[in-house]
Image (cartoon, rainbow, N blue to C red; front, side):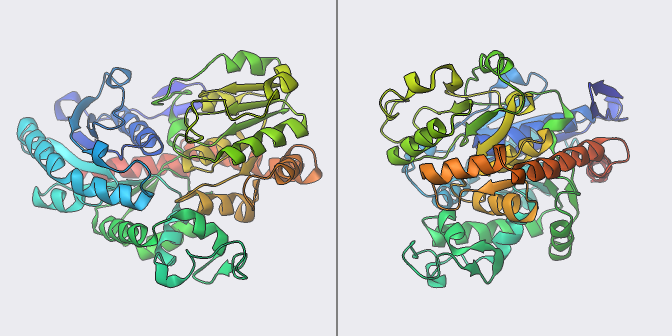
Length: 462
């Protein structure tokens, strides 16, 4: 057994002579690549050889993973309209990657020899791969990089213009009401999920159908966080499910970030008081308007608490970096505010100075915040993020949701609820309890530890 601090990594009993290979295929977006590479590392430490097939777009950095074999395929992503909706992009990739992926996989199976590859693990979003795997008689498991709750929402929600939800605006009387098909969500939440419900609906339907046709589902979550959802999933999806997350906790803080991190922020955090800093990051994909960006800046200035704000170049369409900031903003906040292009998020969240995380509620960010016991302020943008935000605020009660977008008054109010008021103390207690449950789940005999053992045995049975 190999240990890194408090995080334990199991080493497999597979002998070198009988090592089996797993081929993995991630969707080419940072929130999907990261957990797939983390899973690959976990399985490599269990004794499996690893091959990663990946698209040319957002190619992982091979030199960061010298123990893996990488194979690149054409994706024609450059032909896609850059402002396309998520459903359109995902369905496009499922078409454009099919032939190159089939050719690559077939060639690898010949190269490695009969019986040497245990299985294929693809992102659940690459639903076309089930038919390819079936054609070469290779078991396909899927990695679903969202929460279990998100999949329940996808099963229940009607993604179509005919539902009447997606055309509603703030002026409509139903905008604030719950959605009968999934009452946790309000109409205004699902309006955010997609601008193209038909395309999104087609993608979700294809993905869910091929998940059920797969040999099993791997989840980057842990049982204690989503037990009711896991029971429902196990009933609705009659294939094995493995909840062995959070994946990143199997290793010391590490990154497969496609964007260069500014690690100087850690020494800045060293000079701040415990739990005093607001950390703001809206992820690697989301865009916000210039007026929303300025409301964020005004909100932060008005609160007067120290902040670390990740402003990804291009997050405001048409701007290079900080041109849209209010006049003299940087001078007015002085050393009390730090703005960077990208930050080492796991290290920032683990830092004693970090008091809350204002996040887009991508699933990786949500899990990382839970793992470090950092309360959240939620500003979800699209796809699964509004679902995650509702679970954070209304089910687990470990954060607050900015219900009505980016408004400086609402921003100030939400952050004060978490950072200053008694409600924030109660939120911190709940998320600290979840942090402890994460650590227990990863210890020997814990739920994630047991799920990993079950997954390894299952793969070896193919």
